[in-house]
Amino acid sequence: MDWLGWLGTGDYDVAREVVQRGVAAVFLIAFLSAADQFPALLGEHGLLPVPRFLDRAYARRQPTIFRWHYSDRMLRLVAWGGVVASAVLVAGLPQLAAPGAAAVLTTVLFLLLWGAYLSIVNVGQTFYGFGWESLLCEAGFTVAWLGAASVVAPAATPVTTLFLVRWLVFRLEFGAGMIKLRGGPEWRDLTALYYHHETQPMPGPFSRQAHLLPKWVHRGEVLGNHFAQLVCPFFLFAPQPVASVAAAIMIVTQLWLIVTGNFAWLNWLTVVLLFSGISDDVVHAVIPAWAWPVSSDARGLGALPVWYGVVVLAASALLIYLSWWPARNLLARRQLMNASFNRWHLVNAYGAFGSVTKRRDEIVIEGTDDPAGRSGWRAYEFHGKPGDPGRVPRWFAPYHLRLDWLMWFLALGAEGGGWFDMLLVRLLQADRPTLRLLRVDPFGGRAPAFVRARVYRYRFATRAEHRETGLVWIREDRGLLVPPVGARAD
Image: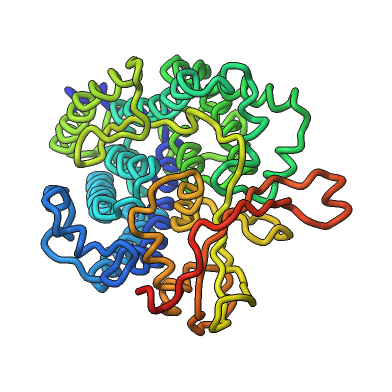
């Protein structure tokens, strides 16, 4: 296989292990989320039933195994199958085989994960309309071609795939940076973080402390963000150790986002992918005790079969070809954010928070068992989104609370698309799968007589207000969004 010797490197054994096992771990969480939430949200009796969606011509053109048949049982089989396959990769079981077999098994398993999750995303409608769904699909397909280490003999890492993983991170970070520069003026005048910690979709336990930091710190956060997203991505392609330093700076910024927010697996997956820029020499210099058991100085693809190297080159060529559209988008004046240019969710455009919301409105759903609907209103509480003003926000990332996220978009004025009306109907019916999506059902599984939705404006309590009242949030009633509706309204 000497003619393909240039294709492999032995300098990224640790990077390959972190990237592959990390991406597999995110897949595991994503499939667990699907098994837990998909039937209530999108199942046969969900808020946006997939069978109804599949009646549309658009849906029947999407690459998904559900285009021929959907059932909640089939969805659960796919989701739990994805959990098992992900766990096998996280545990490194394919690496017990010889190098050629280990690489092929790893590739096949990642392609199965990609295909299974793509099938879910393409019928997930608005509940799966997030940029990190495409990110996970693209990451799964790309890292499938990293080969695999083996306990039997060393096998180097394909350099073209390493380049493409870095190219994915470049588009993710630089795209987000350009969206901000082209977006709201708060990113250019450095005031965006005056608001973001308070108004982000799902605050975490340290979001309030971050929000209360001095304004000069917030301006520094914005400057640091611009440096990490607009400058550092170019240095991922520089020689070592420069590339490792750039990756490390970007990892630190992602860790800050993890500490101060709840963005599902977006930041976690970005950290994992950034390890593609960190060489073994740098890892061993920083952590001398960390020497991967199968680490080698071998060059070339070692004992891997020639045909596998050819397939890696073919997959790399496909991804490079598909890169034209997102590369052009990065330079476009009207840059698209979180867009897929093909039905397979490969080589996508990314970006988030081109503008920052200055105020936080929350929709609070209440119910009463008063037959007249005049008193006794009690709130349904969600797991992640703010509700009870005295409750400290929790950490849920990398787990994705889909209903909570859509409630945030709804409060911003997004169309409910029918799902919100159906949510109220399901609460009136005391539908058990729907109630499982919530943290608190104030009626203990019984059907209320009426439900309604109110809008409140939330802000974090100041330090003085917190000392005086013990509250985390201060809220102001902004009126009814949906007046009381009863079971007869169905």
